Length: 435
Ligand code: NDP
Image (cartoon, rainbow, N blue to C red; front, side, top):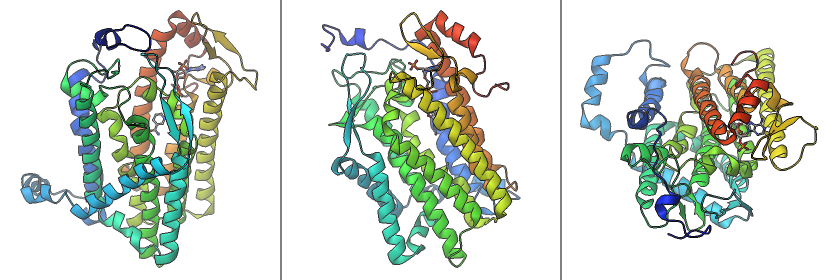
C-alpha cells in the first residue's frame, strides 16, 4: 500500500499491537459479555413489574428457571420495538445526510491524510426535539409511553445494533488499504473486535466512529428521558414531579451541549487513537438505556423534592457544568493557539505546550471533576431509597479513573520527561487534595 507520506507498506503503517489494555483478551471478553448482562440486570433489577428497585426478595429458583427456558430468551426480542429502533437510527442517518452543516477537518492521521467531518448533530437534535414537541402538542404525552413499555425490546435492538456495527467494522478492516488503530491490531479476534481494529471506518463520507460516538446514543438518551417524563405525566394526570424535571433538564442540557460542541470530539483520544470496536459501539446502547435509569426509576417512584433540595441539587449541577466547560474551554483555547487568561505553561521538547495554571494547574483532569459532579447531581433527585440509581455516578467514576490512567500513559509516551515535570507541578490526577 502506498500512503500520502510516500512508499509505506501496510505492515509498516499498521504495526502489530504488542501491549494489551483491559487485561487483554480475557478482560475484553468479560466486558463484551458483562456489559449487556449489566444492562439487562439494571432493568430486571430495577423495574416495577419485577418488584421494585431492587426487588425486596429475589426468587433465585425462578430466575434460574427463566434463564434456562427458550421462551424467556425469546421474550427479549420484540419485532415492533426493533422496527421502531431501526426507524429511529435511519432518521439519524438521513438527518446527517440531508440537513445542512459546516465541514470540519480532523487532525492529520498516521498515513498523512486528514478526514473531513460534517457537523450538523445539533441541528439533528433540534429536529428531533421539534418533532417530539409536535407529537406532544397534537397527541399529548401518551404516544411516548411506548418507550417505557417496550424497554426490553428496544434494549435488545440497540444491543444487536452495537454488535452488528462492531462486527461489520471488524470484518471490513481486512480490506486492502485500511488504516488500523495502533492498539487494535493484536491478531486476537476478541481483543481487536472489542478495542476496534480499524481507526476510522466509514461508509462513503459517513465516518462511523464519530457518528456513533455522538449521535444515535446521545439523542436517544434525551428522547428516552422526555418519554419517561411523559409516562409520569400520563400516570399522574399531567403532573410531572420536580425531581423528574431536574433529571430531564440536566441530561437534555448535557446532550445538547455535547452536540452543540460536536467539533470538540474530533481531537479526543477516541477519535484520534482508538479504533471503532464493540467498546465504542456500545455507547449507542449504554447512553439511552443505562444513563436514563434515574428518569425511568422516577416513573414508578415519583418524588417531590421541594424548593430547598431542588435548589441545592441545581447548584451541584451548575458547579459541575461550570468546571467542565471552563476547563475544556481553557484547553481548547490553548490548543487553538489562544491564551486569553494569560495562563502559565511549560514547553515540551516536542515544542507542544502544557498548561500549568488555571484549571489545568489544579489537577491533570479538571474536566473529569466537573463531569463527575454533574453525574452526582443527576442521581440526587432520586433520593436515597436505593443505591441502584447511583449506578451511573459509580460506573462513571470507574470509567474516568481508568480513562485518566490511559491518558496519563499516552502522555507519558508522548512527552517523556516533560510529562514527569508536569506531574511534579500538578500532582493531583482529578480532584485536588483527594485523587
Ligand atoms: P481530556 O479533554 O482531558 O484531554 C486529554 C488530553 O489533553 C491529553 O491527552 C493531552 O493531549 C491534553 N492535555 C493534558 N494535559 C494538558 C495540559 N496541562 N495542557 C494542555 N493540554 C493538556 O480528555 P478526554 O478526551 O478523555 O475528555 C474530554 C471530555 O469528555 C471531558 O470533559 C470528559 O469529562 C468527557 N468525557 C465524557 C464521557 C461520557 O461518557 N460522558 C466519556 C469520556 C470523556 P495533547 O497534549 O495531545 O493535546
